[in-house]
Length: 293
Image (cartoon, rainbow, N blue to C red; front, side):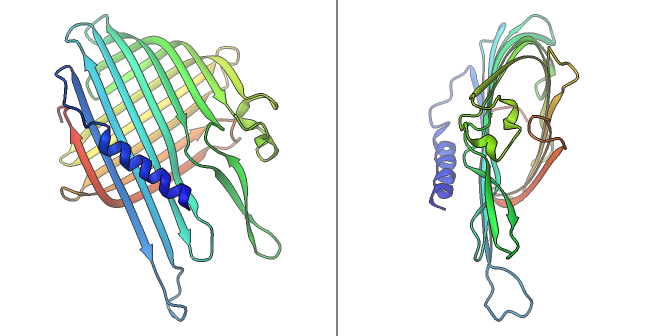
């Protein structure tokens, strides 16, 4: 439990300090950070039934984009999220856990086209478990993931189509994807080992990558983010990995917002079936933006 509160503290601290410096004229920045809390408590004789529980989550979405007013631009996107729920008499379980960072250097070659070089990193903060009950009904957790197991580092060169500020598509013609599984014993619980050969910590692939991103206030106080990533190794073009992330955030008032996030993953190196997650939260939210709405 202490680790989980430490992770949330790191997210909140980074959120408060990330944009503490004075704004520079060639930079535009935005920050969205918040915390969601849900708690329920029942006496032992509560006839309506129920389980006492505590759910806590935090998020930080930050962007920092630079332009020299001519040909060069540099876009940075950081997304951190972590949450857990603890029911009475049970260990805490994660509900969401993500580290995402994307940095892209672009050079304008046309009204809507850029050449780009980018770096993208994704992983998670905390250990992940699958849960099952034995014949006696006792729940047990099996370790299936942790920080840097897996983690993905993708470096790409290609062309970007950007007709408007809130939408772009990248075609990564020269892309290297590195998959890390630093825990070499993880395959014992996760036989696929996220595509990395057993006994090794790293797998490197040359892939074609396609990414489309939409980020816009679709109405007053309501923001929609959609990001679709698809990639395929050049030596096995029929093996497509894809991830869709959709996030809708609506402000109730200056400090209270509601958020729903949906993720869909298709990656046979992780599981033969499509993975799906949905998280809904209502809590305190702080927003700051230097971008045009």
